[in-house]
Amino acid sequence: MKALSMLFSKLLRQFSQMKPGAEVGNEGGWRFVLRRTGVARLAAAVLLVLGGVWLFLGILEDILSGDPLVTVDRMLHTALQGLRVPLIDHVMVAISALGDAAVTIPVATAVLITLLLRREWRSAGYWVAAIAAAEASVKLLKLTVQRSRPVSVYEGIESFSFPSSHATLSIVVYGFLTYLVCRGRQKEAQFRIVVTSSAVIGLISFSRIYLGVHWFSDILAGLSLGMAWVAFLSVAHHLRDRDTRGSPLLSVVALVTFLTSAAIHIALHHSVDFVRYAM
Image 1: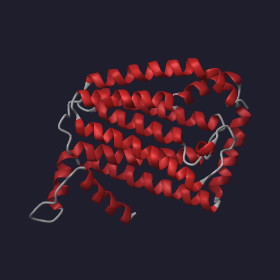
Image 2 (image 1 turned 60 degrees about the vertical axis):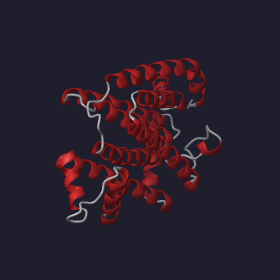
Image 3 (image 1 turned 180 degrees about the vertical axis):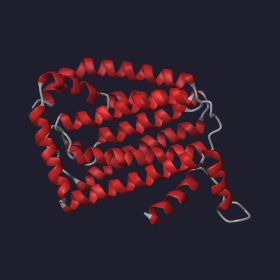
Image 4 (image 1 turned 135 degrees about the vertical axis):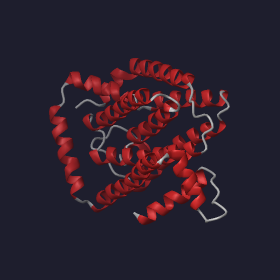
């Protein structure tokens, strides 16, 4: 954990382009961090980053060594598959679609275009880095671990289940978007946005377990990895964020794109997906 903490502080300085204070080494830099973020927010971010990485590595170790977590995965999978009914299946297939590339890519593209039009170059760079790094990490881990899914419904690299692409990309796309949208808003509005975003991410993640295409540990690993990445980028971005007011336009564009792409995707592919995820 100490090594993770040292790595976190080093990366934070690099990403935020901080320069150590001239008088006392890195002390000036950390004084700036505390003044800019506040003790409570910084402590929460450090906890999320280090806790997320630690949890992910713990899950990975358990999977590779075949520890009891694998047994828990099988028990939960069997229990949930025994509770499935067609009506809930339809709902879960639709919810799962919210994490498909057909929805996340249009949202990511619309957000990027909006940031570029507003000349928020730094925010646009962070947005691209957040999604690109998450996607690359998931693909690399799938190829490295090569864990089979509970059921075979995909081909190629997507036939591997660890970690869950839906869980990881959902928390990165919708989580970092939440941070960008919440800038400058009142605490009540921020709370509503965070709760709504968390509910969407949570439902997408649960739908993947319910539909039987992921083990519980796949989802937990994806969420922990994505949470750590989002928390780290949010703090690094906040340290040099000049537009702390945020943009009402960004939230409108993101919401409209999300609802439109989700509606079109579900309408076109729901019946096919329902058959694919059938019990």
